[in-house]
Image (cartoon, rainbow over all chains, first blue to last red; front, side):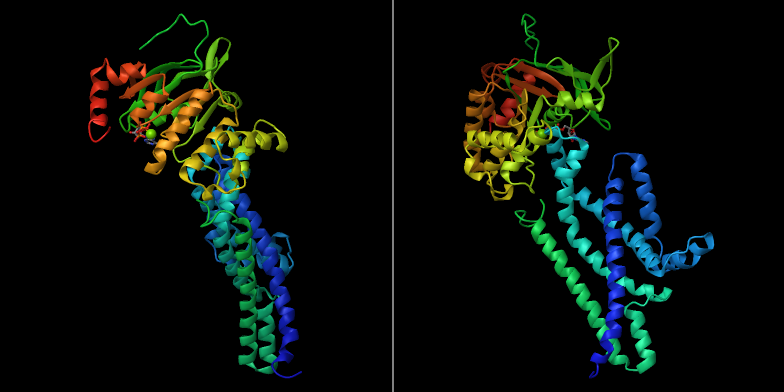
Amino acid sequence: MPQPLDLMPTLLQGLWVTVQVYLGAAVFVLVCGVVVGSMRSSRHRWLRWPAKGYILGFRGVPALVLLFWFYYVMPAIGLRLPALAAGILALGLNFGAYAAELVRGAIAAVPSGQTEAAIALNMTPMQRMIRVIGPQATLRALPPMGSLNIELMKNTALVFFIGLHDLTFQGRILQNDTQRTVQIFTLALAMYFVLALCIMAASRGLERVMGRGMQGGAR
Amino acid sequence: MNTNDSATQQPLVQIRNLQKRFGDVVVLDGLNLDIEIGNHVAIIGRSGSGKSTLLRLLMTLEKPEAGTICIDGEYLWHQQQNGQLVPASLAHTRRVRGKVGMVFQHFNLFPHMRVLRNVAEAPRLVLGLSRREAEARARELLDRVGLSDKADAWPQELSGGQKQRVAIARAMAMQPQIMLFDEVTSALDPELVGEALQFLRELADEVSMTMLLVTHQMHFAEQIADRVIFIDSGKIVEDDEPAVIFHHPRQQGTREFLNAVLSPADD
Ligand SMILES: Nc1ncnc2c1ncn2[C@@H]1O[C@H](COP(=O)(O)OP(=O)(O)OP(=O)(O)O)[C@@H](O)[C@H]1O
Ligand SMILES: [Mg+2]
C-alpha cells in the first residue's frame, strides 16, 4: 500500500475503540444528565441534595485522575474493571456532572409562565414535566449538549493512559515502529476532526427535527 | 359593600379574611369577597394594589398566609376533618382547582405544540378524554373563537389577538366554573385592543360563565361587568354596579383613582 494509506488499518482499529468509548460514555452522560439534572430541579430536598452532591463531586475532579482511580484503585478494593469499562465509567461520570448542570439550566430557563399555564390547566407535576417543561428544556439543552459531546469525544484520548488501544495509542505505536510522525498524527487529527463533524451534524439534525415550528428557539 | 344574604344559593366563590404577604410587603390584608354564579366582576385599582395576586391566589399559583377561599362549597387550601379546617392535601387542592380557569396576560401558550394540541392536551391528560373527544372539543372551541382555520398553526405564527383567543379556548376546554382574566389586553398592540374587547364582551354575553377580570380599561370594565370592585391597600374599597362606581362613586379613594386614570387624554 502506498504511503500514508498503509497506516490506515492500524489507525482505524484505534478509531473503532475511540468510537466505542465515546458512544458508551455518551449514553452514560445523557442518562446522568437527564436523571440528575431533573433531580437537581426537583422541589424535594431528598432528590435535590444527592444530585447536588454528585454534580459537586464529579465536576470538581480531573477526568484523568478519575480514570486512574477506576482502573488502579478499584481492584485494590476488590473490583477489577476492564479498561474499556473503566474509561466509559470515568468519562461518563465526569461529563455526566456537566450534562446534569446543563439540563438543570435548561429546565430553569423555561419561562415560569409555562409552569403556571400548566398548573392552571390542572396538570400534575409529572405531567407538567413530561408534557410542558421537558420538551422545551430539551430544545434548549440540545446545542450545549452537542458541544459537550464534542468535548467528551476529544477527552476519550485520555484512555490512552490506561493502555486502551484507542486512536491516540495506535498513533504512538506506529510512531515507534515507523517514525513517520507527521503522517501519523496528521491522519489521527483528521480522524478526530471527522468524528467531531459527525457529532455536530447529528446535533444540528436533532435540533432541526425537534424544533419544528419553534422558529428562533423556545420562547 | 352589598351583602345579599337573602340569596338561597350560596355564592360560587367565598373569600374570607384573605391575607397575602411577600416578605414585608402586605399585598392582601384581610380581603373578603363573594362572587355569585354568572357574575362578571371587573377588578380595578392602582398598579401594585394586589389585583394579579388575588387572581393568582384563586388559581393556586400563590398560597395565602391566612384566610380561606371557598369555591363551589369546597375550600381551596383547606379540608374539613372532624369539623376542623386543616391544610388541604395536594389531591384536594387539585380537585378544587379544576373549577377555576385562567387566561394569562401574556397568554403562555405552549410553543412546542400546535394550536389544536394546545387546546386538546389538558382535556386529554387531566380530564381523561380520548384523543378524538379532546380534539373534537378543541375544534369546536376554536370554531367558537373564530380560529378554526388555525388549528394546525404554531402559536408563534399567530397575532397577539389570535393567541389570546387560543388561550381563551384552552381555558374553556377544561370547562371551569369561573374564569380569571388578568389584563387580557395589555399585551396586545393598540390597534387590536378594541377588537379583543369586543370579542370578550360577546363572549361574556354569550356564555353564562362566571368571570373575574382585572383590567386597566375603564370603558371595558363598564361595558363587560355587572359588578366592579375597586381594590386599594389590600382591601376592597368599593364594590358596586359599574354605573355607580364610574358615575357616582361613594368612596373618596375610588373618586381619586378614577380622576387620576380617566382625566388625561382618555375619551
Ligand atoms: N412574587 C413576588 N415576590 C415579591 N413581591 C411580589 C411578587 N408578586 C407581587 N409582588 C408585589 O405585590 C404587590 C402586588 O402585586 P400585583 O402584581 O398583585 O399588583 P397588581 O395590582 O396586579 O398591579 P398591576 O396593575 O401593575 O398589574 C406589588 O407590590 C408587587 O411588587
Ligand atoms: Mg397585575
